Image (tube, rainbow, N blue to C red; front, top):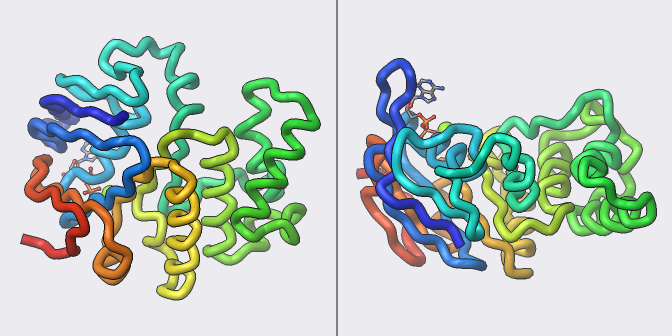
Amino acid sequence: MIVMKNVYKKYPNGVVAANGINIEIDRGEFVYVVGPSGAGKSTFIKMMYREEAPTSGDIIINGINLATLRNKRIPYLRRQIGVVFQDFKLLPKLNVYENVAFALEVIEESPDEIRKKVNDVLALVGLTQKARMFPNELSGGEEQRVSIARSIVNVPKVVIADEPTGNLDPETSWEIMRIFEQINARGTTIVMATHNREIVNTIKHRVIAIEGGLITRDEYGGEYYEG
Ligand SMILES: Nc1ncnc2c1ncn2[C@@H]1O[C@H](COP(=O)(O)OP(=O)(O)O)[C@@H](O)[C@H]1O
Ligand SMILES: [Mg+2]
């Protein structure tokens, strides 16, 4: 499902953020990516949806080889992967409904299909009542729920999230985790970079630790610890 083989990433400034990463993640897994700041977690995640291209090595997602993927096929890849960010990245001039619908409209769905799919995912994240509100009228937790709804509206096989609870208080973070757990329970693979020790140690899943651009630990039902 997700395979990285000898993935190496050197940024133009000379920083090596991936230094020979090898990993396989199966369909339906839930994987935490942990490690200190600057370890290469975001780079690892960005390479999965081709925000960054590896300098060398192979990355295969759902059978698509990112190493040979042509730029014009990137939108096709991104429709198969939901992405959730720490800072939500909602479009400020669109309301909740429109922010989610926007992800679908680009692939020319019919209006009825759009309405049904958007309403379904808004219900899943508990935002039916707030569909007409704008991002600046929402709490951080609500904004993150919108961004999760947007990430799953195309029913991707994989959702990747870069510190999705990083800007949220503990209680809201648990709510967000419950939504990720539900999405994972429906069979969606989740790869989530996080600094949240309590979450990693409580909701047990596979833990991949990255340090200096290398995977230093890979444990099922692992704990958050550094070093
Ligand atoms: N666009 C970039 N250009 C140059 N260096 C970068 C870029 N993005 C990240 N880096 C560097 O790569 C290393 C890994 O960064 P990152 O993947 O963001 O780590 P993490 O998410 O674990 O904090 C860091 O040294 C960082 O400064
Ligand atoms: Mg990061």
